[in-house]
Image (cartoon, rainbow, N blue to C red; front, side):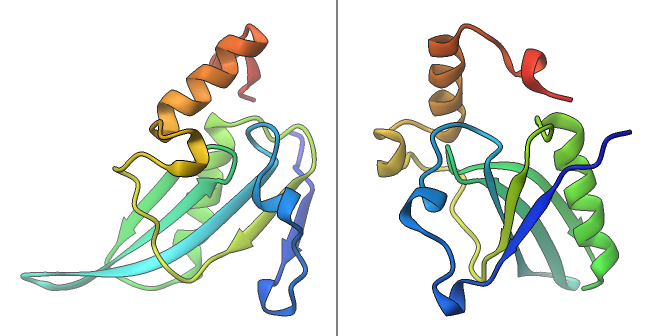
Length: 131
């Protein structure tokens, strides 16, 4: 099995450029976040990974504990459904991103519609580009 190349970025030092936040196609820059959600039984933790091309959440894991193993699980889930053949920038963000609404970045389309539009433009499907 091939292993993707990851570039780890720390935004506190301003290490990412405008282009890295606005990649030209999917699976160039992913961001991860962990947030906690209160329910009647206490807190649960939501780990998510977003593709910055479309701002789409491409993987998530809900857990009762805050452990690194859940982050690894989330990354592995994302790798199964996305194209990780080329080098990939992976960054951790600190606030959870709203996955339901349309995004101005995407021309006021939903993340799913934005990626579908891109795939139609290049004449392929997600199955063709996924590993």
